Amino acid sequence: FQFARAKRAEEYGTDGEPDYGLFGMYEHLAGLRVDIEWAEEAACRRKDHEAYVTWRDYDDARIGDTMANAPIFTYLIIIICGGAFMCSIAVNGWTIQPTTENPMLGPSLETLVLMGAKVSDLMVNHGELWRVFTAMFLHGGLIHYMINMLSFFFIGSAVEKSHGTMKAALVFILPAVGGTITSAIFLPNFVTVGASGGIMGFLGAASADIWQNRDLLFSKEVNGEAQSTVRHYAILIVLGADVLGQLMLGLTPQIDNFTHVSAFLYGFLCGKFTMKRLSMQLNTGQFKDTRMRIFRRIMHLMVALSLLTLSTTILMVGDGHTSPCPSCRYLSCVPFPPWADEYSKWWYCDSCESTTGQLHKSYNDDTDDFYYDTLLLTCPANTTVYVSLVEQKTTDKAALYASLPMLCRDYCNDDDLY
Image 1 (cartoon, rainbow, N blue to C red):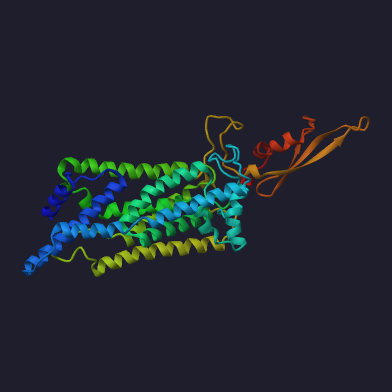
Image 2 (cartoon, rainbow, N blue to C red):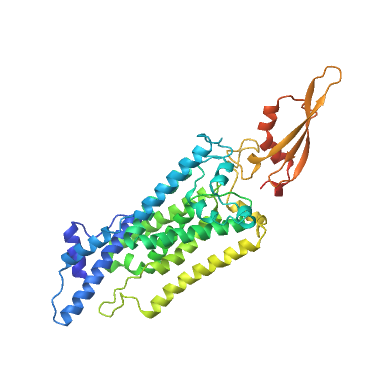
């Protein structure tokens, strides 16, 4: 094995140190996998006095196999999400909403619902469970799309090139679906979209890969004492920063952290199933899966599928409106900035932008002039409240309708804002 590591450093003109980040980590793991496999095969053949393939020929063949794992699935998801985003803007009349309604520079809430966003009521009470799939391809706006696709390109490409298209598809789709279902349970009155669930699935799977191969990734024997600690922290910092960035993004409207956190868990379980653990125990067949290791890998997949089945059952037996933890919504969206007054926030975490109202006129018997004296306000939860406009005595209908969101926040009960 040490001979193979020395040949790799000689062949590629480096000291064997990979680039930092997930690309570097998977490049490093791919090299370790090839060197371990060659060393094991060469040792066995030498023991049996048989000829063995040189390290260079073996490495060239395996590199060809790795290059065949072009990130087709990653490119396909980026294209689909891009097409879905353009369609949502087209359906929205080629316009974007005000930042107070959608800070991500994107379409209206109604447009996203029409396109297939996650809406618990429609999923539970109208049989539209297909939204668990369509929501992952939609994005709240240009900012949301660009951040997600940039992260997805780097993370998805690294995972798919190392482990193949089928495994990458499993690690993306199952966490994305599971995350959407969890969101539908805990945030039934929130409309959410995004591929963030799939991205968090990739991050969870990468974390599983790091965890089960930590002895090799951070080994002083393999990597050298000087660089081992540096690589350890560099990889973890990059991975942690990406997770933190997704969680921060989840504090904005139409994106939620219940999807992020649960998808990360699903991704970790899927990673434990799809990604093999490397071993330095040569000549013992340890690189190949033992029966117990196969059993453990299958059990991780069974746990993920069981959680998915359980959460789907909990969602479908509910009413599509009630959350088991109403106050938990603040873990997923925070009005911003916190120092601004109630009328100057950049965005709000409610559904008041969809508020409607009916105006009542009051006439002056002597002059036939009129003004609006009462507003029947329909809150997002379909409750109604009367708002007196007598003191204002306004005739500006457009201004009154423009003020409906703020009137909603002033007069509707907190439980009726979602």
